[in-house]
Image (tube, rainbow, N blue to C red; front, side, top):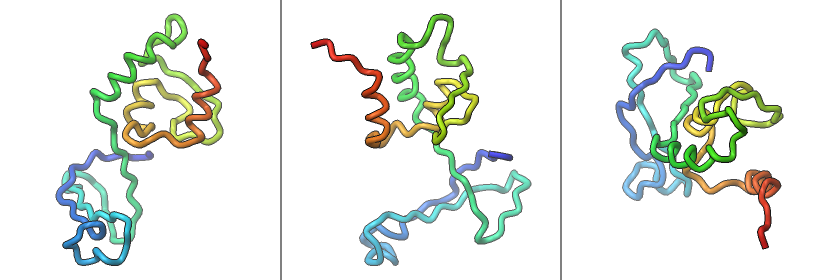
Length: 128
């Protein structure tokens, strides 16, 4: 997070999980070899250096969720209003807004984990 650089993917190929791959029989997990184009950066990458990858959620997915949570936000608060949270273990930065959290810090493409479902259940009401 100190000095992010938006790099394009030059190439990607499966190392595992691909039935025709060289390492196909070594693991049931999918491992992908990815090469990034950092030619226009000042990054001096050496093999073995750590790289953080921040994948964003599709914009239309974020808009879909934002439209549904807008009505639950307090008066005079919108999806772009910065907020500070007090969660001790969270992928969301302390200062953020709803749109940024949904775009960059929350995984909208995977099934929610039990911890998230429990947290959501605390805010649900039973109309029956």
